Image 1 (tube, helix red, strand yellow):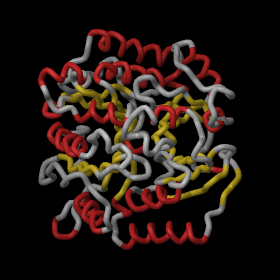
Image 2 (cartoon, one colour):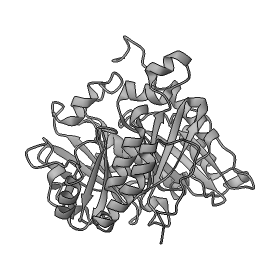
Image 3 (cartoon, helix red, strand yellow):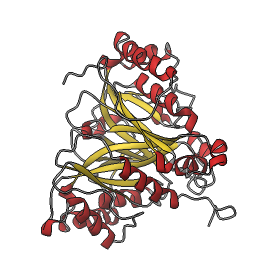
Image 4 (spheres, one colour):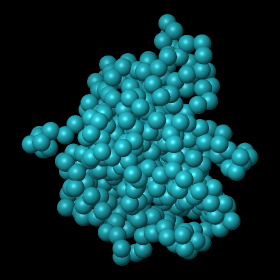
Amino acid sequence: MTFDLKSYQPRGDKKNSDFFTEYLPRIYERRQSSGISDQVGNMRAVVQQVEPDAMLDTIVELYVMTPYRHTASYLGRTHRFSVLHSHPDYPALILMAPLSDGFEDFIPRINRMYPLARKLPQTRYVGEIYAATDLKFLRDTLEDQNMRFEYAGDTENPFYTGNGFLFSTPSDFTANRVGYSNLDFNNPNSLGLGDVIELSTEERTRLDKAAAFGADSNISPLMLGLDHMATRILAGEREDAILEFLTMVPYYFWGAYNISDMNSSTNVNRNPHVDDDKKSPAKVFTANNTPSFVNSFDQLPMPTEDFVRNFGRRLHHMAVEIKDGDHTGGEKNVDFVVNTLKDEGVPFLAHVVGECKDDPNLKQIFSKHSRYTLLITEYIERCHKYDGFFTKDNVAALTAAAGQDEQYQHGHVFD
């Protein structure tokens, strides 16, 4: 697939600064001339960490709510790992949990800084891993561009410095990491995560029951893969976060739109080398239009910045694409999936938003935050080959619904 970064005009109505407009093409050019574009491929895995006792519960939840299925588990020096897959061409999911509640590294240290993240100190989305060829070349080239990477002895979790992996330090703007690897994620035994762990009979039974629910209810075939992941950040760091990300991976800035009703903007970055976003999902950054202390003059809604102040800079949701089409009685597939999950007890923030009639459009909905990952799962159906990425009305409704569920009440942090 060919894509001309020089001629592409980003979509949207969000005005970017002269700084952003100047440095975006320069980053594209340097990425190409330095060899980064040739070295870095598609997203091959996403990484999440959960509490030590939450691993199996999280996998069961993923079975019910996503297309991911367990492939293998491992015991490492400091963590237990489970690898899950949805499709060989889509990113794997690496779930890790410390072996001890008292494990200390970046994750519990930063989580303790925020009132609604403290109750799950070990729980955080870590970042993505992208296919790469020459890790030494990548490290040397990107360090010359002032990117920072983990070295053995610098981090308490040896996963970040394992053979075949290269991880950045957490971003100052998003707290996410960017990882690279030349390993085969469809062969988890090649990842060097530790000694193989066989699931117990009880664990197998729970997973089989969760898988049977998806198959028997007919929702599993409708859940296709990850469509995008969205990180919430502070207003003044929007452009920096985008440019830093684009320095490190061969994505492009698709565009940004103001969501005026929610006093925020949604900023989308996509991989131009895939014919399907699920092969290398889009990365979205959402930020307030104005910092909270300025917003106090106008008293506008600001659920995005409130989320960051309550949970910290972090991933907010992961979106699962639902197969486009009608279920029985003309019900859209996304409505059928959501109603089936509701009947199973999965809580949602609001009703499905958007319409899919005869014209291309979107239907979307947010689940409530997972009790195990703190992440929201979004379900999105792109009807009639809708070629945009989102609609402003849908995003406004989803943002408002999430904001109502993410409030911090003083004195009730640990309830």
